Length: 184
Image 1 (cartoon, rainbow, N blue to C red):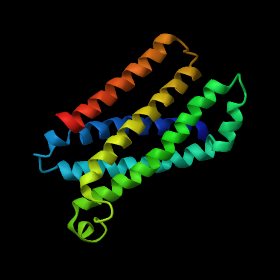
Image 2: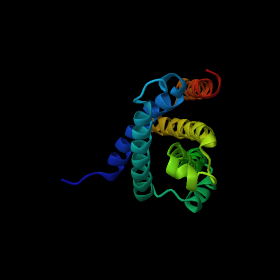
Image 3: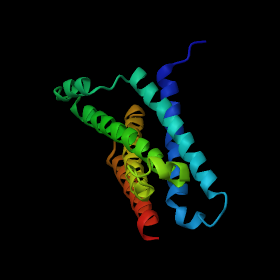
Image 4: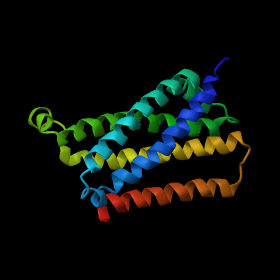
């Protein structure tokens, strides 16, 4: 039985999206959950699992979607296909930023451990971990929003209400993440 790589990629993508949502909630709720002794283990477990899923997602994306800047820029020249390639460009940019921020989140998060703080923690201090985490969360939300747009396009749902749904959902999630991270 042959495995359809694109379908596998989509399933992994939505698994990453669902897992990201769980991570966003647990990470952004750190002020409420830090009182529990299980929180550091929960936090590390979900973030490391998400990093593994993100790596798998990136590998499958490159293999099956073949998204590279030259290909996207070539597609932008085609007037009929331009809207699709604008979204692909957004996905590719957020993808690259997510990879960089994920690495910074992991490296700065290691500052939680004394052995790291004493050695490498001077270069990427633990104090800025929450800011990397916040911007990573925003990029993930934007990336998933574009994924929703492509899902709607595949299912031939091209209405203003679907676009409004995506914009509202993204805005609400970004507002919640901002409130949980900096205000509450």
